[in-house]
Image (cartoon, rainbow, N blue to C red; front, top):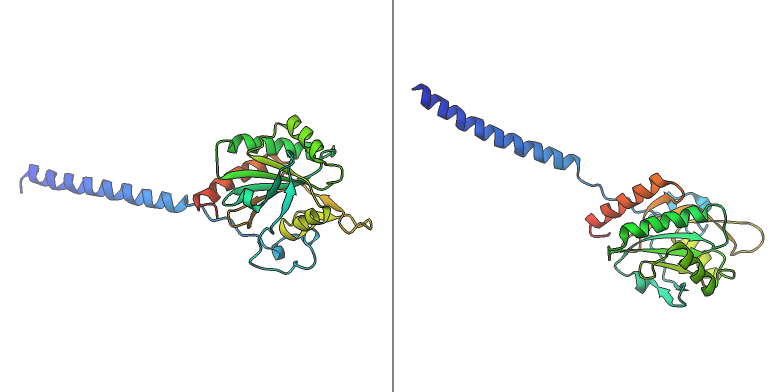
Amino acid sequence: MSFLAFFKGYKNFAIFFSILSIIIIAIIYNVLNVKQQLPVWNPSMVNQELVDSTIQHQQKYHKIANFSLINQNGKTITQDNYKDKIYVADFFFTTCQTICPIMTDHMYQIQKEILNDNDVMLLSHSVTPKIDSVAQLKKYAKEKGVIDSKWNLVTGDKKQIYELARKSYLAVKTDGNGDQYDMIHTENFLLIDKKRRIRGFYDGTQPEDIERLLEDIETLKSFGGS
């Protein structure tokens, strides 16, 4: 065999081996970087202080209940407004001077990130609906830069909000002051998928949790939003 023939055979092998190596490396890279699906949260997985006693042991099939509340523009907001949407929910009140301003600022940051994303919305529930009238919510919305098409601030029947908070979103504590529908909101932000399931809990006062939330929205979207 001539030297040129040997070199040509080696060259062909080297090209084949190089291509094979690139393919193997690409496969390994993709396997290591595959996004994992987010967990589906059910009441049994959540701190019992935040969950109504009637559902604390529920281990599957948990979904956000139907609702009918009024937003900052006096418009009725229901599940239909969030149909086939991913959304971030929280609980607040407009006169809160502790964690609410931080939470609202972080919601505003999320709003900026999702402004042109038709798949994602925001929903903030008042825990003091008697104080947070439509007019009060509208004033607050203007002050905080709320964009109506992306973010609803809602008020309404206190019993319904309480039951949503404790039986659907698993997000507030009871006060224990004698009012059966009184509640203490927490810093929790909830990520809800297109099937109305809870896919994540986040500390709405912590910037690193907001970054994680935004990343999880992208992960959820990569699986079709559910």
